[in-house]
Image (cartoon, rainbow, N blue to C red; front, side):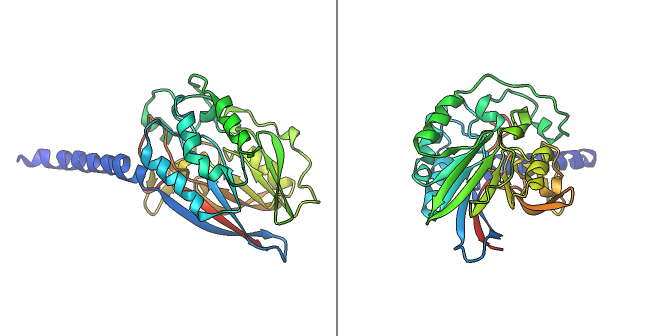
Length: 298
């Protein structure tokens, strides 16, 4: 082989191998992240919270559906679904079926933009560019069917709303926002801070935009739980995420961190999620995940 072609061919082969790995293997390599968060009052038993996020279900994704069903075997105390369940308007029934074992447990949910609107074909590398606030929304999804399925199961709808769970006699308050990514968040509808009558108050939002995090932090919520970022989806080893698809800094693209705003501080957990857009079905150095959070006394 002429040596002048060797380097370009080698680069092309390496790129093809990485793309095959990212699409065929890693995007289907589901994991469970485990974290402990010290936010409970003293004397309260630990609580196990399962967070499922960014499923982006497409009809026929059997491996993902089977994995979601098996998560119920973890026996969490309750489930938080932080949105973007759909990437196919025909996948509502398959999504609800996959989540049925989890919906037998106490739970709550917020929606993301892809629950409301279907994806549109686009350049898959666009996800890696800086978010400039431009939104091109696809056709409306049958989100009401998804909502009704969750509501029938007794899950709390936290889209710009407050909810409450009672576990072993303890009152757990949940306060949520609809998706800031498409400007559906209305903090004024849930403002007022944690209910002091509850043993614990948690804040929930799909996309961790700083305006939402700042508001929750200012009012004293000890933990904010979010999704949306896909953990960056494509990460560079030893560097991390290239983007968060919102105004959150990339070092917080996934996992547990401390978030500070105006002299206040809270824990922030961002799930890397377990799916991708149907038009960008790849992950690299960022496997799909759900998170089992164990809340412990502070």
